[in-house]
Image (cartoon, rainbow, N blue to C red):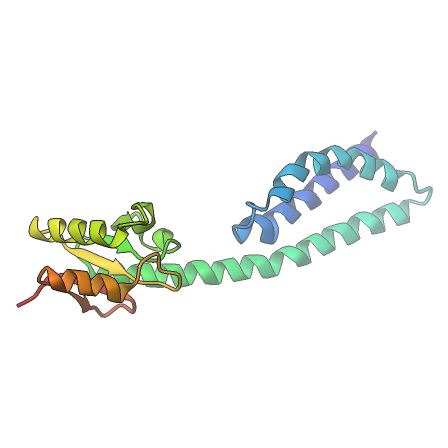
Length: 194
């Protein structure tokens, strides 16, 4: 009975280590097969434990458990290191944005992915939520309205923009506004020309 519990706990630990590795830590839990197979994995743990206990020699059971744990730990370490590097990069970028922008600034994201890098230190506008057919016109109106209310407004460009920065700059220019570069790469302030 005690052996069964020890092996069950070891199996649970191995499973937790697996799920706390690249799947969750790297933000990839959205893979549907992982979510849907989790109950199957959990329900199979007693079978795995029974299989391990079925060996007559204890040394084989111990070696199996140890090998599962070692493999699980080795799978986790690189994923954690990669994720920590990503968070460090985000933190550095966030600090640069916070030091460059005003406390009441609103930053509109041309790239749908970078909101986590700025929020909650600054207010974020998600351009991807605007209707696609006239997104540029609506965004231009919003930017101008906020600027006229003396709200500092910025645009953050990215790798996968949902609207062209050049097209937006042309629309703003027609209304007497410009996109001015800042110290932060891909961050532009909306300013009145002149």
